[in-house]
Amino acid sequence: RAAELVTVARVARHVDHPGVARLLPPLAGHLRPEVRGAAAELLRARPELARGDLLEGLLGDPVPEVRRTAVRAATAAKRPAAILAGGQAPARPTSCSATAAASRA
Image 1: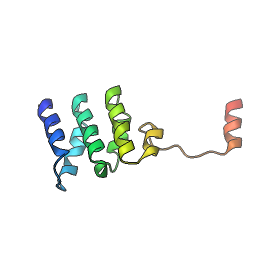
Image 2: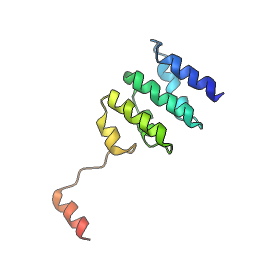
Image 3: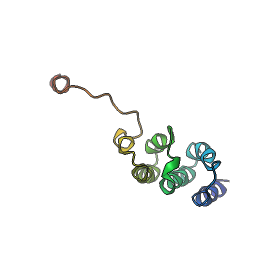
Image 4: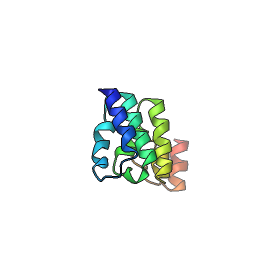
């Protein structure tokens, strides 16, 4: 089954249909890392599909290869903040004095 889903993701890179976006959540959340990696590759090839939490979830994936592919997808989607956040919500900016006080504590 995982091999079939990887094939679906690879074919979807070349399909121009609004339904392709519906394929991404189950692929990106799949138990098998090769399927999640294929979802990240799909996002890299089709950066316009990189919406919502999908990319962030893949950037925080426990498997390094999936994360690397997700970084490439985030670059293609021009979402550097997602990369810097490491798959998590961006941190709230702090003032320099608050940062300095925290480092002294």
